[in-house]
Amino acid sequence: AVKNLESNDATKEVVASGKPAVIAVYAPWCQFCQGMEEEFGKFAEQADIDVYKFRGDEEREYVQAELNTESFPTVNVVKADGTVVKYDSEVRTVEAFNKFVEETIGAGVN
Image 1 (spheres, helix red, strand yellow):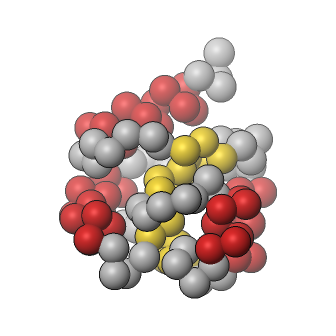
Image 2: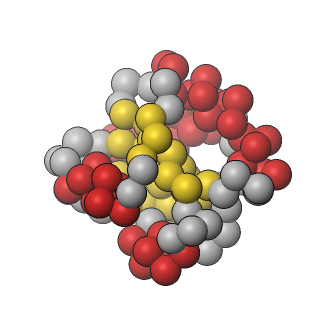
């Protein structure tokens, strides 16, 4: 399931945890965020890493500086070393998210 991050500090803990994760930065009024919710939920159900969402519209300076966010939704993969990598596609399907996670985290393993 998608876990909700309630604060900037909570997102910092995920980034610093040393474990890969996915963080979606969203705004509740954003139609593209709403449109992605079901697929993102399905992705989280089958992902073998933690999947989070963080409301970014009330923390714009923070999400711009720390979570690559200029617009909503922004999906990031957090690598084990704390690098935050933005998902640049507008294809928001389970398959596309899986592929991005594999490419991003898999690339750091070899």
